[in-house]
Image 1 (cartoon, rainbow, N blue to C red):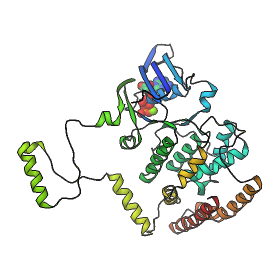
Image 2: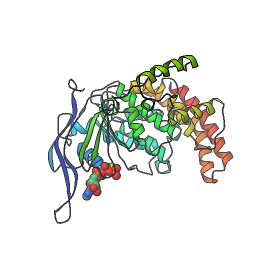
Image 3: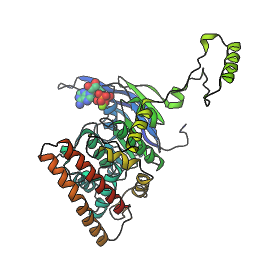
Image 4: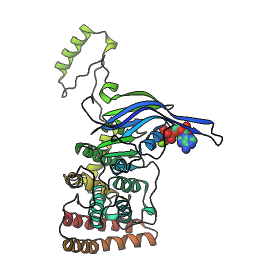
Length: 390
Ligand SMILES: Nc1ncnc2c1ncn2[C@@H]1O[C@H](COP(=O)(O)OP(=O)(O)OP(=O)(O)O)[C@@H](O)[C@H]1O
Ligand SMILES: [Mg+2]
């Protein structure tokens, strides 16, 4: 399918053997594999535990040396500085500095890519909104729930506006709404021409977003292809229609009976996926303004990211410059500095109330009423923030 596309990653005879203390081969983690990843595709690297996914990813990132074979990323060695500038990485395990706040975390990673202070601030604000963490910008990431840590990790992976994103288990620890948002985000990035490589154990997530998959087992590629190639059952047919009236149904069944034996066909109603059903139930509950004593901010995150085209617009801004990011040329168009200062002060004032409530809730063992009040206040602050930033 990708004959006319440019390979971003190209591996030939790629192998990695881990050795023990005496240099004896211990594990053939990756065993002579060939594959290519093309520009603009979302590719899933799948396989059971220990099949070599993370080892392959670490070689692509230049964190591990291959034992044999060749591997090029953007036509160069994975270790080249130019290559690293174009790659964003969400690791499998949390690697965040727990004493930094969300905003400081993004600022820190932006500084690693030599982005100017203004650029870092602009991007951090937009990324926090995009992943639904604006309300927690001044909270330490050490206090974050697993889902929140995943979100800040995703924002971090995008701070350098990478052309290639490598996401190790991006949806792990997220609730179904969070999963949906991350999947939508990945699809939006694809629309912007980004290439995304994900590893996941959650096959339904992979099925929803990947164009192509590579299935590893014992360090070898066992299957590869587009989902259509791999999953379409070509020796069966399915016709989906609106609900038919009984006369038409009888006619249809009699035609099928004339041509097929009884056990060769089934006639039933299609089923929606559990994910689809779950999302419908939750959005219905939200529409009816049903109270929840769930995670403070969790509901807000979902609301924000599913609202209108706002995340798209933010992404438009963030990915406007698809070439390599330079500190000199800001990729995000903003107001002059005085206005930003003003804006920040206003944001500070608006978030102060919410932060105070959050702190009270933390120090006084978070009774349900305080959590509910915090959620209400956060919601108001978020609405005002959105107005300000739009
Ligand atoms: N640093 C290491 N030293 C020795 N062996 C290793 C090392 N890293 C990985 N391995 C071995 O290489 C093989 C592949 O491991 P890898 O972490 O790549 O698997 P994975 O597919 O990412 O698994 P998981 O789904 O559990 O994350 C395993 O047998 C593992 O024990
Ligand atoms: Mg792994």
